[in-house]
Length: 190
Image (cartoon, rainbow, N blue to C red; front, side, top):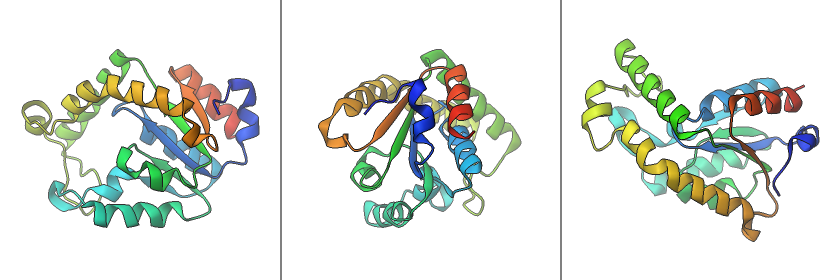
């Protein structure tokens, strides 16, 4: 069911939430704000997936981890990882899709890459994983390239998903601008 802004107050009882969207859309920021406002645990899909030195988890490692998180009574989960949808959406109550404009998303992901690269910031403590300009600009694993190639595909996927009878039990919020995000936060966490 797609939720309209007038229905936001009715969502306050939701305690299993997945924030989705293309890289750079603001998923982590919104998910942290929701978790803080609701005082419930926050989990980042990328943190669950990536091991030290940018090693990927296998599905045999990743799926049980996602299941362990989502079997809990309360959580805010940030991230897509489409192959985990049957696990994470089995118990989810609310999916918030951040569908910002292409230009805004590109700007945000590029800005984040440069900030992290220049600060040499470790993304997830203890992993040694850091963004580098070389990886961001010259690699097939570039998060900027990922954003460019997945943006339109993600839009199509989520537009279809929100209409699917497979997910009738889920309430969907579709946010397309920062002011909508702010209005949602104010209504939801009030």
